[in-house]
Amino acid sequence: MTVRHSILAILAVGPCYGYQLRSEFDRRTGSTWPLNVGQIYTTLERLERDRLVQRGETDAEGHLYWEITGDGRAAVAEWLADPVAPARGVRDELAVKIAIASTLPGVDAGALVSTQRSATERRLAELGSARFDGVPGGPEERAWMLLHDGLVIDAEGELRWLDRCADVIATTPVAPLPLSTTRPRRGRPAKTLDPAAGAATSALAPAAP
Amino acid sequence: MTVRHSILAILAVGPCYGYQLRSEFDRRTGSTWPLNVGQIYTTLERLERDRLVQRGETDAEGHLYWEITGDGRAAVAEWLADPVAPARGVRDELAVKIAIASTLPGVDAGALVSTQRSATERRLAELGSARFDGVPGGPEERAWMLLHDGLVIDAEGELRWLDRCADVIATTPVAPLPLSTTRPRRGRPAKTLDPAAGAATSALAPAAP
DNA sequence: CCCGACACACCTACCGGGTATGCATATGAT
DNA sequence: ATCATATGCATACCCGGTAGGTGTGTCGGG
Image (cartoon, rainbow over all chains, first blue to last red; front, side, top):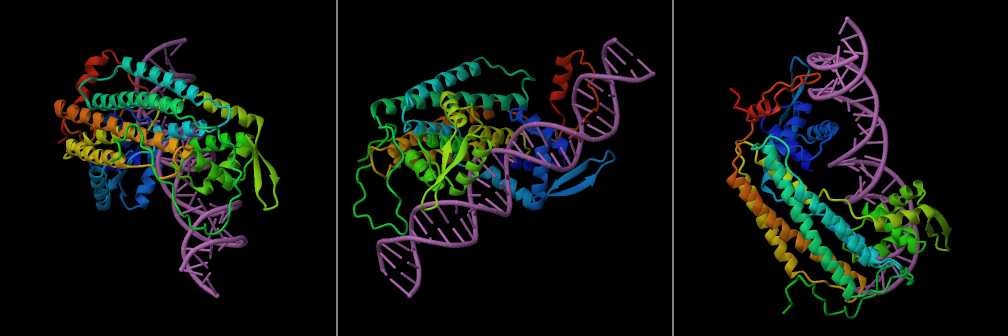
């Protein structure tokens, strides 16, 4: 939803035509987020459908200027006021991958973790030597710095997490899981008598009282 | 691509029918990643199209068992060997949002950052009090712990990053950007003789009349 | 002097992940 | 008897994102 909202926010500054939106987006984000031009037009159509945007004037060169509506301004305000939703990113993807891998017979999950660790370390090194090549002092540089720092912090966190994964895998061995042989019973399940008690805490969580 | 690969990896253990794949996935990931059943079937069809999977036997209950192919096994091996691609997650989304916001006239980017910080702190607190409620000692618990720790590390990193953002915003003020007034020149760009001087002057756009 | 490179400008088709929803059947609880 | 819930499958849809095609105008170089 980033592109959608960003376009809307730029239109809140003033009417723009499609291609212009892209250059404004690039200027403000330092070309940090690769944006396909085609996406602009489909997004504009969807915004129009949702009454957040409307077609405005057409200039001599044939440029169609899009204007933001009242609803659109409200949506921008809401976007700026609301924090972005929790996540669903790489960490989840990695977590699922490792979780699945550690249940597969004949798969060394530890090796997977260490491979990933090497890749992340390499990434971190590349980030360390990356330099902004553009006009300093402008919005592009700020955007670049913010993104760059974010990637660094992310990579560092990934390393910490991978170490934790290696630890969990090494210390709490789980037998490889074959396919479940229990035939599923249809219908409403029988009432369970006692749910297993005692949930373990993770190392990062404070000890339960 | 997580679901696609995970399904394939489970099929490498043995043939399964659609619904069975979902329960195996849940069992191995601790229901950590909410997986819509419908997705299984569309994914299986795509896997079949790509020759990674093929239709097998149908049992007495009418369950169609899917089998992995040789290409499929190769794909699983490749998935397990390759590290997960760099990212494109929340951090990017947040970075773009902050970058855009800090160029909008009349928008307090600092307030946006602090709002986000509050939300992340709240999230972190919730994570701190979260406990695994399931059968301890199994793969579900391991998956839950890995994911949980990942979320904690991620939230902590986000806080660090947001502090950095606040710092950048406070110390390197950028004038709010109006829409660029420079008319785009079509055609092949003129050969730039002195790129530094020309670009630097045009970087700071004066307010349009 | 024309050709090719390249930027502007727009449009369309397509893909893949994900969600919602509908349908049918079986079964235990109330 | 009825309802709630689980298994089991199928389909339509949306959305973000990518690829690729169509022109047009301008400049540099052969």
